[in-house]
Length: 129
Image 1: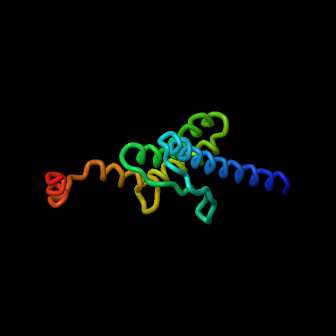
Image 2 (image 1 turned 135 degrees about the horizontal axis):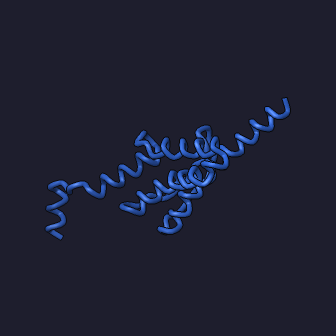
Image 3 (image 1 turned 120 degrees about the vertical axis):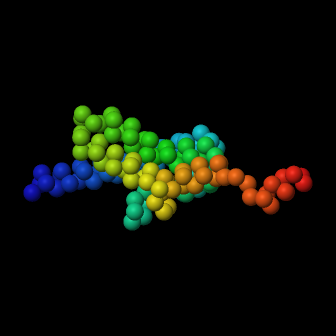
């Protein structure tokens, strides 16, 4: 019974490490681009950060930084702790999916905004200025 509990606790710590590393990735890139991080928290879905939004590549980079950190963890631990590597890999690909409120969705929105053609009223305002 004790080895089972220890194994379960160890896996919970590894999952927490996946989450912490993911959020550290966001924080590091946000700081690099001077994007304010307003809050770091934990809710029923896991850890999260609240930060100011930016535009263009700084926004895309910040959104994808967490998944990138999880990919790095997966590569580093692939031969050492395969279960942890798969857990980290799962965190990465789930977070880059463009589902509502995900990092992938925010990155996709930032990318689309970069390549959006200005509407006619916006063009007229730019010409008048």
